[in-house]
Length: 127
Image 1 (cartoon, rainbow, N blue to C red):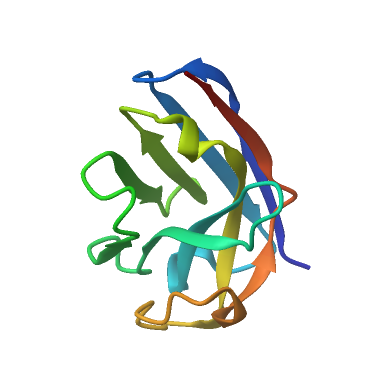
Image 2: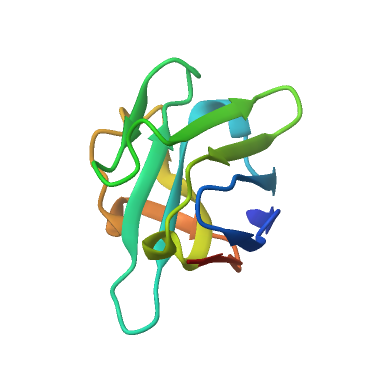
């Protein structure tokens, strides 16, 4: 059974930084594209960033490009999201997700292409 556990959320002022982590178990982590999504109150869950299993190819939503950095440590089965220059509109619950299939390209950024999800961690950015 795949388990994904996010940590690192919190309250930060605009312009500040946070680093989210996701601990994964129950899957061969090094073979799965991993992603971060977020969901703000009253809004649909949206794609934030993804990183292919090879640790090289990354994808970002336009809204976070240049501010957020996704990374992974395949030896430690962990996924990270470094968030800098945070804005109030980044406020949301952030979810870690594993792709449906091993060795996927990760180019499909829809939530439906990810099969396992964590419980989420709240990020609140004050103005």
